[in-house]
Length: 395
Ligand code: ATP
Ligand code: MG
Image (cartoon, rainbow, N blue to C red; front, side):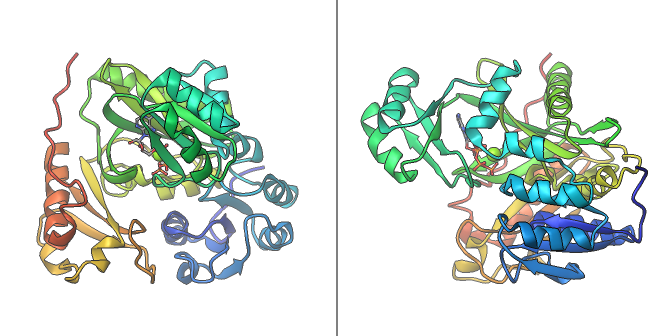
């Protein structure tokens, strides 16, 4: 099967901000886009020529989507495998069922990574409150994570002692969960890999990421790290993508520990929040790259054109007393505003982001954080937007 050319229709399982931004890139290249999402007012709706409102378990609805599409991709990993199979019987499903199946369950994903010999921190699959307590006994400070549906730190419980095992077990719905040792993190990195059906890959330079309370606060690219660490992270991510035989995008979230080890935290088979800066700083942004990969077009270069950074805008920005001061924020040189068109601002909900470019990663990050402080002085205290010193490479 050859390239799927502009004029064709790309179907999306999931129409949140990731789908919306990919759809905009697809439209810019002349593709039609359709979407299936459980929410009537999903963020992609205004961009799609057809929106099917159905859950990610609805095989008939997925077949209806596939019937009018030439290829189907996804922006969320929580899609039932039967739905992925049903699509694949009609049109190419990219990424395919097997890669998504491994990734969509946290226990399955971590176990697979460990079995394949990829570096991960200590973890256990807990199947009872006693298992959770036992893990904390062995690990000390830990995090219990639900197997499905957790994101932005939701579905996670932090534990300090075994006695908290029972309450964590019930908080996670008394279902099997992953318990990880809490790693001493020096730095969080992610690497994005794009891969075509032929196996051709493009690997982006690592992004440096900062989370507050389990939610991504900012990301900057390229990460200011030593060349060997950047090369190691890119090789690791490429190797995971190849082992999964993924077609589309794979984001590999990593921890660099205070002891200097590089560990895989988790995988995502889709565009990733930590690569929103690629639209500003990379030769090819992640959304266009996904379109190219799933349509089997030549991948664009992932190389850095200019350092770039983003800061997330959560619903809190709209919920605190004063309205966000958009004109003041956009006075900062190099900044842009990206809003996802979501109606209901809720605390912790991702509503948009600010981006900035600069001559250096430090300048790009400094600008976007300054823009944020101007936009929303009222949320600065609860959202860690103090500007860090990005350490220069040590070799
Ligand atoms: P997202 O969807 O935003 O990527 P998530 O809800 O899928 O997040 P994780 O990536 O597992 O959850 O965790 C979110 C953040 O919590 C991590 O980026 C990291 O800052 C912290 N964290 C997660 N696991 C650990 C760990 N084992 N040790 C220390 N910190 C951790
Ligand atoms: Mg994560």
